[in-house]
Image 1 (cartoon, rainbow, N blue to C red):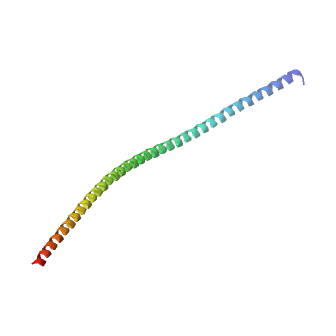
Image 2 (cartoon, rainbow, N blue to C red; image 1 turned 45 degrees about the vertical axis):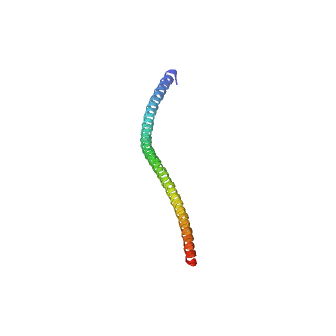
Image 3 (cartoon, helix red, strand yellow; image 1 turned 180 degrees about the horizontal axis):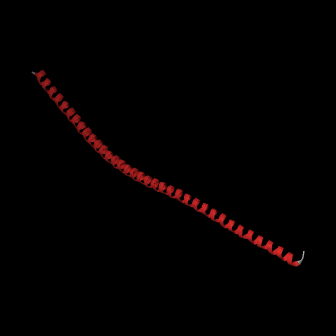
Length: 131
């Protein structure tokens, strides 16, 4: 094989290799584009799922906040009711103590009246015995 033929053969091989490189580059670009498109779709899908979860989370947080506020209001109402009942109980105890004191005084007065009546009955009996 002379050098001209060798040069032609090598030139043909070079062109064939360059053509294969161009095909591989084009194929690589297609694969890269497909991969990028798949990644973009996956990112979009995940972003949508994340947005949905964030919306659900925010709604749950708002509901829990509302529940806590309602519980706080209920606790405040219970606290006020307990204080009101405590006041009413103290008033009832005070009234009962006053009633007991009045009853004790009434018993003492009755005892004194009974003693006075007995003394009077004794005096009347003594007068009756003398006459």
